[in-house]
Image (cartoon, rainbow, N blue to C red; front, top):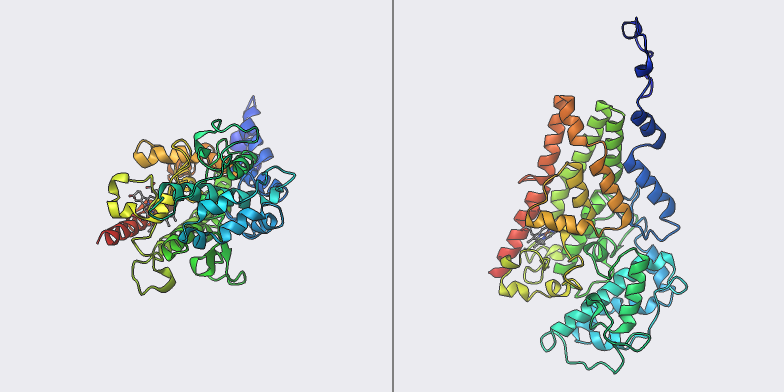
Length: 441
Ligand code: HEM
């Protein structure tokens, strides 16, 4: 890019000042530093393994998924925080017996500080403690219906100095033996307030059945189980595993998106065309994942009972009928407070990245406002990666400015494939409406 060929005589002939034959500072800096998305990716890959990926899983090979989904849970199991994951392992049975609060109150206080919980175990600790806090609230609020009355021992809600009412709203009413480590672990993860997210319970909460089974790709619903299910019904599993699977299908997408940005930076339309076609091939596969959530009782493991299937609670309250409010997962996934993210598919990195990649500018709708809010709470690496794509070397602008019909055609195809009626988003709408319909009939 700096000087592909010597300038031709027609250009240099008679030039009194040849300064402009040299590249601009911006171009020089681009060559020296590389594309912003590449820099974010390289930094994430460099420090991730040493820091337990606490800034968020992000790599060229595994995309937004952990390189090994068992690594952090194994590290937690080897630490005193094992008491949290042990309880989460037993959770479906504990919930079924209405014994959640008793079991949580019986846990000893283990701190979430680095001397007790190593960095490698941080993700697993965050997921487990977030589940424990949410499920405690769930049973408390549904007492007499899906739980039994429990009276907490005196002092269960007092902090280390014996005070009871110093808590923020997120941890109010949650016993201190969970609230204290949850707060400590969330702080270490860069979360200003403790909360449980949609990516915690889906893309960081699966285990592989057969790690050698890689066709068509390894991280697919048929090859996974939820590591820490709360209710252990197939509705919960299919909903969360499909969220993980779209990121499994998209694993190479992070590298492809980065290469698209590099192609724009280098003003190389041929490379951009190649990478955009590659990206479209990936996005074209995503709608099939939604079809795995089946309302047909004969669909075996893919059957997601519509009465149980989990509609994100904060979404479309108006859409939900009374019967749907009976859904256990919707109740469980209530956010710890109104100011922290609710559990919603919109918080998943893939969607927020694709919006940025396609140059979405308007975020004024109900879901648009929600998307901006959720993006703010993403792990640092993922936020930085999305910001790098959104703010530098805009791909749609380059395509429009190029006047290249091939590039324009592929961009249109990509938008259709992601947001179109028969694309990823259209299929989601159709699928979720059918689940809603069947849950009412
Ligand atoms: C059968 C299970 C599901 C149901 C019933 C459901 C339901 C909903 C509902 C009611 C909304 C609100 C917006 C709308 O009406 O379109 C929504 C939005 C959304 N859901 Fe789902 N969903 C399901 C599965 C999933 C899965 C598996 C994913 C991810 C792989 C996902 C990702 C999203 C995203 C990204 C949005 C925001 C859409 C936008 O910005 O337009 N959903 N979902």
